[in-house]
Image (cartoon, rainbow, N blue to C red; front, side):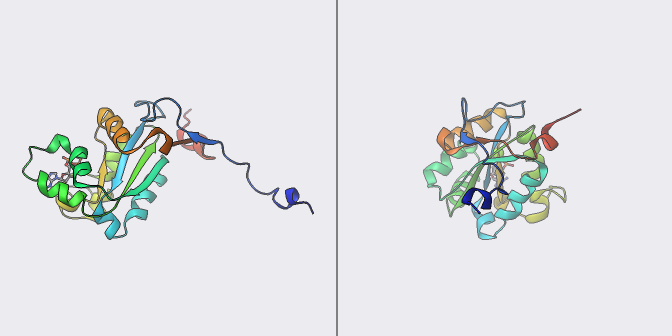
Length: 181
Ligand code: DAT
Ligand code: MG
């Protein structure tokens, strides 16, 4: 048996390359992208897999992922729109207190739909079934970040990922998730 025959059962390699054009996605299309982060409490509480599982199960595609320990400056820039809030100092300290898992997900409606999977900002109000509704109780320990609109998605993806860190590829089940009749 030749080496080729021995591996003939293997699937053909999936074409995979750095994202062409804008790596921040195209809101309103199947190429919409959103920035999602498992916060330090999610990492410490070993809920990263649970969070990823929910985004995968929905049908969106993971196109970038890395573990980072943000500096206070990075955390402050990420949350710069909240700099006047009384909780800003605590938020920055918390977000830079340990590693996070930074991700970019792609697919139809992933920005708004991702927010729905997450649940409301305060987990006390998050419906059961949502990530925050199921997995946490404190607004300051709400385990996940997600972009809240097309502009913030594009800015946050650009702030956390270079084009080379994101990939474009096709999954075998894509037509069963993204197609319509
Ligand atoms: P979200 O994370 O749902 O987008 P946000 O952008 O308004 O919410 O706030 C960012 C984070 O700041 C939030 O996830 C937790 C924290 N935060 C918001 N409101 C807060 C509050 N009233 N007290 C303490 N922390 C708060
Ligand atoms: Mg927000």
